Length: 424
Image (cartoon, rainbow, N blue to C red; front, top):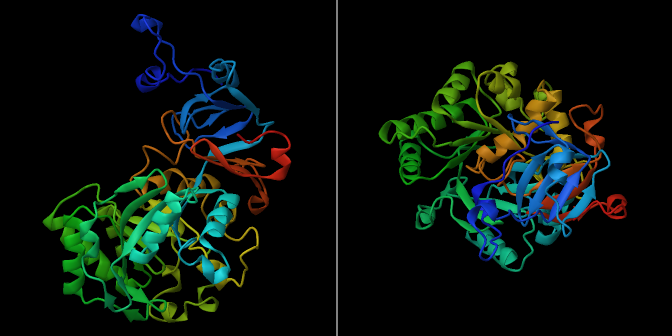
């Protein structure tokens, strides 16, 4: 590969030489350079590279081996990837790793380790009430929150409404580089769309208040009826307070008509899906009530969402899909990013489309595309080292996560690459 990515002005200011004129100031050398690998950047302007340079918790350069290695100083650690693949750290956009991990035998610390071992560098915890948020704060202060967590604050569960308790918090407030409040969580239906929790007027009011106060809304929506409710509420909120970049989310998106699909695109809604949920086998796999109220073709329309231009992000709903499929906490590849990518491909997506759902598009889903989701200078040094290149592999679930790096620090390192000094 040819070409050099320029270092930023901010990086050039990292090292000041006393008494030297401005044009003699040298940039700080990288702490670590990973080289001789396959680097899938998920960055459209430079999709592939060979090497990546890290300074503290940020990426400072991505490019060909010769260019990036030229930045090294005597103190830079050089890590030979030996042809292994580097990708942005995977983002699980809808999960309950920490909050519900005890259902499959995890403590909070074990849930964090399990996610890191599988290759997740960020997770969106989709039900963080006051107690759970306090637990996350404690984990963070203790240094035990070794990945990045976006918390979604519930405002109802079933018919029980929790009021506007979230309004005392600043939308998208960061408490540390590892803990951030992303939005609020609504539950519109339950029991696979057979139970509903809001009347239209009540929902319109609640969504309107949250939207007006700058909150991203993440809504559990399964049935076509619930989609109608939510689309109406979002339409009214945007009409009253226009915001072309509100990025409100629809979680699950199981049953969807053509007209609803078009409205999602028009409203700029994000579809947050779990590819591990069944599609064609819906009648046999838990959705008979949904199918009975509509058409089988309305179920799990993942490819249609992408074809229609709806921004679509992917997730595992961990641990719930593991429980649905009868898995256990220690099972691999349950809950791994490459299993989820494999499942998405089984629904008709390309590997490249599926990878985007768990990286760059997932970062967009939490307004964080400027700091994560792709490998580029100034972004967090959050990435994984994989045993194989998923864009050419024939068996995606068998790809091993050899290392998981968060903020430049190796938080998971497989034995066979630790022995080869492949982890920072």
